[in-house]
Image (cartoon, rainbow, N blue to C red; front, top):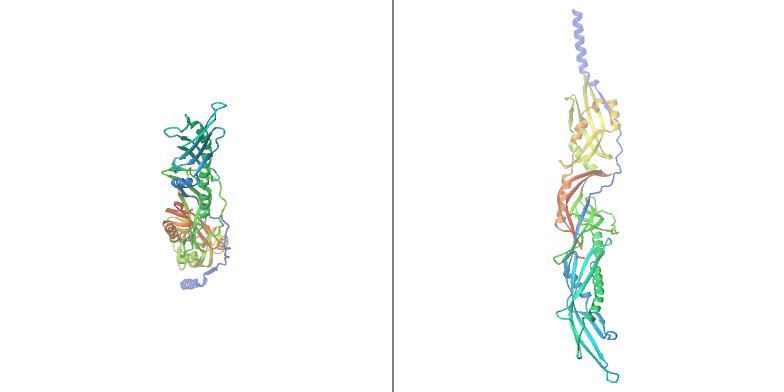
Length: 484
């Protein structure tokens, strides 16, 4: 009995001393993981969606009319010789040329004054004196023409003009002695001959005055000038045009008008003025009436990795997370974010421990996680998905702290990482809209006007210096050429 009591006492002492010695028997594993190389993989450069900037172009018919009245003036035709047909004719413009437009045609009315001189010559007999007498007269007529207007792929106005003329109430005659001679048959051939000359002259003046290539070429270069949106953020609106489309010319209500659509890549950046050299080569013109004013402008939010690291630290540093029904836990001491190819690398400096029976296993050091960034539209923030341990980290954890590798650290961190970009995107949208509301002037001759209706996510791009989140601002944008 005494021997049994001594054994019990010895067992109790052993248990007590064992429990007292437990802290001293716990083991701490120091992780010596290597940091992955911080580098952003070459990813395709961001290309915003193609948009069409609409440029209304209109020319007053009255302005064209005024120009043509200056160019087509004075004597249009003159034949002052009586030899041959005994008639001399001079045709001059009599009053203002008038012009009207309808659909794809321009109609001209040109008042003319005709001066005609006729000679009457009669030899009654060989011995009788010859009678040689001239008389002159003048009368008015109106030439009516119509010009069909089109455009060519090299931006030239293509006009085809045809016409006829009208006499007044009576056709012209001349009284020569006892004879009353009708002049219509003499004058009409000359006038009809001149009709082709007048038509060619009208075509030439129209094509020279309506220089569409000049309009489009200047607009093409002007829209490529970056527009500054904000000084503090150094935000710029840039347009990279790709091709030019134009709607068929429309003639209505005294105006010759069309719409030019410059298909472009449009973006707003906050990393300084874009340095891209302008493309001076004007592409071939595409005749197309189906383009719209709808545009998509890429708004970018740039988050430097240093700033992203501070946000992550604010979210997780100093936090203790419990796992496996509180059997395990870890504390994050520090955190950072760096690029790793096309993924983000999260560095966590942690202390962790787990209980295995009467023993406690501890871990301390840095673990590295990799995840794919994406833009979460609901929270307007950058998050990560498919988070996993970096290969070196996973390998060392499996050898020294498999319990940590199997924990819910990945799920917790994936839920924690949240880099808000709402403010940047909202500010970019406000800057853009404010600029458009105030009629952003790309050039002293070109105004931009538009409206931004909605934002939709595009993509995430990792650069060597930070994370770029791109969101498309959808709306309308027009450019007005007002000072050419």
